[in-house]
Amino acid sequence: MLLGAAQYLARHRNFDGTVYLIFQPAEERGGGAREMMRDGLFEKFPMEAVFGMHNWPGLPAGSFGVCAGPMMAAANGFKLTVKGKGGHAAAPQDCADPVPALCAIGQSLQTILTRSKRPLDAAVLSITQVQAGGTVINVIPNTAWLGGSVRAYSTDVVDLIERRMKEIAGNIAAAHGCEADVFFERRYPALVNTTAR
Image (cartoon, rainbow, N blue to C red; front, side, top):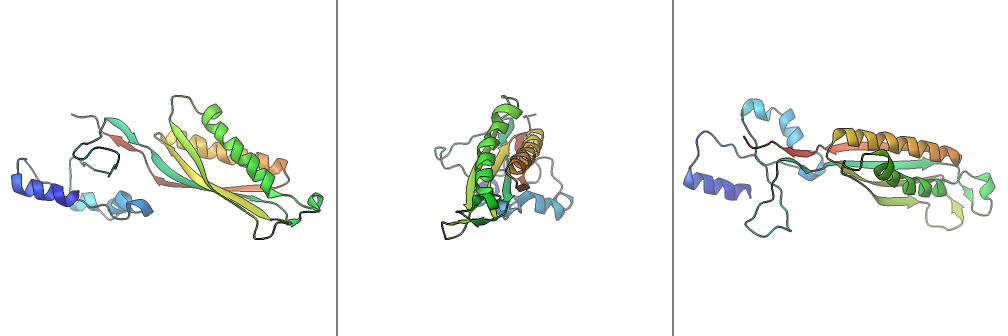
């Protein structure tokens, strides 16, 4: 897409000023624009405005989807680990089973979206991974974890979700005689387009 734009601009040159073409590296793996800015991109190449594109396979060829304001939500990841005490499945009274605690936490996390945030504040909390135990069926594991993705347009909403995740996980784990640890990773901020001038 960028090379096609470069070719078009080089052929037609129907603009005033200087156009810099920026290819954002490692967009999906934690690099991208943030790292380019840390490397001094805007000091080396001062710019008045930046126009970015993202591939969107669902749009018809030759069309663009654009709007003023929020367009793409912030992307964040999490891993929530419940630590208990394992043992034999025939003697659960001697264990602090992290599995039912993890299940209860997973169900309760959805209440953050329906009971903790304002209905008008868009957000998604998706559990995409769950892991507990090994290869045998008669052992209660010491730990269990789940992971996933949180997306929202507002930093305040992301802050709220992270805080409530930690509160819910800690309290439910404690009720089961376990402990919970929540690792929350802020990956990319929301894309908020500037209103046209």
